[in-house]
Image 1 (cartoon, rainbow, N blue to C red):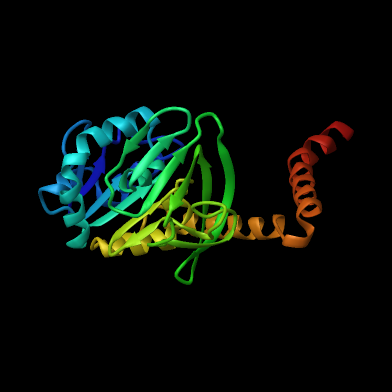
Image 2 (image 1 turned 90 degrees about the vertical axis):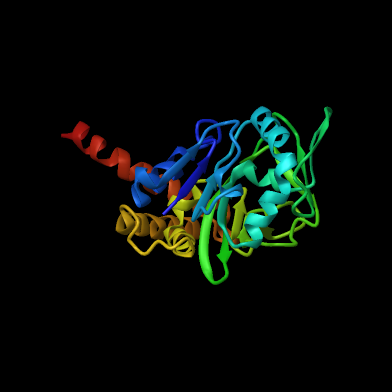
Length: 261
């Protein structure tokens, strides 16, 4: 199998080194194509089973677009021939129409999908998000300076039930077009959601087990339970405080008992 990690030395922010390590452990180093910046991605010219790209700084984002604009048709053709691609974080912004940096310039993106990205530097938005991929529950973390305008929900990946979608007016998130998957959500998303990851890897021809799959599933179950208990709609603040105090007691309890002894 051929698994491409695009610009992994730069596109690795906010914990996405974990996704690269998951790919290495799942498929083996010999299967990886680690494309360095500014090389043309391998999936544009040859058969690749799975392509991954993570989030990057805004400066790197602009440099990537400078190199990729002439190749947008090759990107589109890869999607149309069902190459499995997964983009995390602000790598999603690359495939919209434009990226507008508030108070600065507007940059032309690849124009593959009908949305625009509005970036407000130093005004970061952080949130825990949960929802569904088809009928599969998923969750992740949103940490971004951006929102998306235009027809941001034209190719939805996820239906959001808790948290914000692509903008405050929609409850859908990301892009799903044939075997192209992209989401703003982090975590890393692939590690937080092993069922989704198994499905994604299966599309690429992977039939084995994920590394530490049992532990990943148990951790996902605990996160979902904790999230539901903490953010119960009508009792959000009291339940959040109750959960915090309970965990504090679990951590500090043994130390208190020792002090009493």
